[in-house]
Image 1 (tube, rainbow, N blue to C red):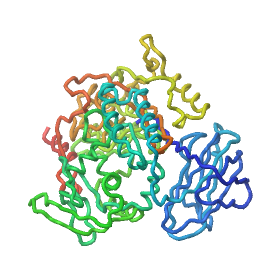
Image 2: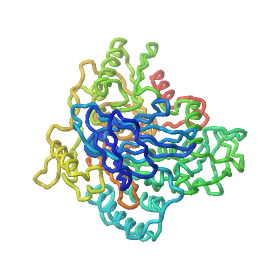
Image 3: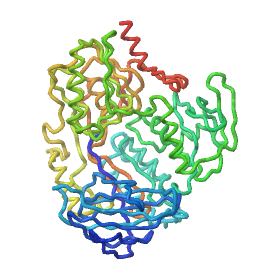
Image 4: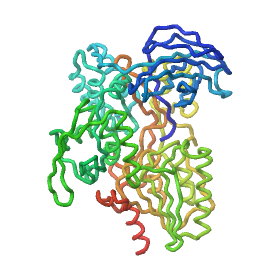
Length: 601
């Protein structure tokens, strides 16, 4: 939800000095050796050439040091293979990950972003990295330093102290710290600290393995060759594989480990808002193979499966199923997800009108402005046109589907709410940040003095220090939209799920407070009482190079529904969940339930 930025990965390399100038032939680069700081001016373009080997995963990084650049990767014929411009401004990394299908020379181009807000000149560095052959061991003192930085950052930002006391949080940290050992790898360290991030009980918190680990896994990891879906805590397979008839089967064991043990591990490292678990299950579904590799086996040659037929309870075993490498797994996911109905959405939002039953179905899959043509303006235009059509057809029943809506930019939820209310509403009790400055910024994207000053200035533009010492939002900063003239006055039904998160869940909370909507599906992934999001501080731990983010704006929703337990999401009035055979057939159980409600009304 709300504003976001791209992680800055701090690359501490020194090596070859290169003088790249616009208009000259590409400068040859040596792999795994960073350039010294190079200078680039507006109107210039630098280019570099290097040899890449077939099926090897390379990480190409341009570190921006005062100028916002766009980078592109081209083949020998000049065809653009990838082009990247992350929304991280004049500082931070632009990164391309690439594995060629044949050994060849490639060209990297670097040019300033043509924007009046960009600098006229600035520095940058370039490195093309090969995947490591093995993960290097880290010294205890280095790991201890990273651990303390992470723990103190959470304490300083108060993340993890809304649902937990300091004593509880410190106790878990002590338990995990005692597990530190000399010569652990960055992957070992990730496994150790991931539960601490989860214990914050903030779904917007995150931690990821180091770039070294990620590159190693891309090159050497072997993946579980199945997609899964979780219903009622049971894990089902969504695809067949060659001669293995596994589609729709329930998993009992993988390589001798019970699915209960596997899921227990995954639930322990998947953050969520408060005490909610519905979001965890949805996110684990899409990350199942990745998590299995990180926490159980990195390089299994094959998999042995014990399955259960969901209708007959018959036990089925398959042995020696070949594992997939990273490239094979990517192609597999792309192919199989296209074959599964409703696995993902194609349009950010759409409207369907059924005049026979006087019903409109408004699907809003995201509040991310980048997914809409013309951004926020485009979304508002879509809503205006949709509700005008609803009014023109004199529709009596409105179904709003936010089951896949994981949020987006601040205020997008209010644009939709403005068509459901007849008066202004109070959105939050308050929004609060921990401070204007933070002691750990040397390990974040704000490590540069100018960036830190700009960040503080931005915070001061939205918050002030109140008489009680808290840092509260300025009056009128976060408020709802003015109610629309052609607001909908009929019956409203809202479909929700564990993927209704952040702005999606916040919309559901507002609708719960200020409309008579009926909710169908499962508990939202986002908390009813609020969340911590807004601004994110992205960190890179100095030794292990683990990366992650810490949200700092605590949004406390104006609560009206006192029956919802603290730390939980919006509860459905009608709890409806499909069976595995319904899901695989494309039958929309929740939608059909609502349509029957309307027909029987």
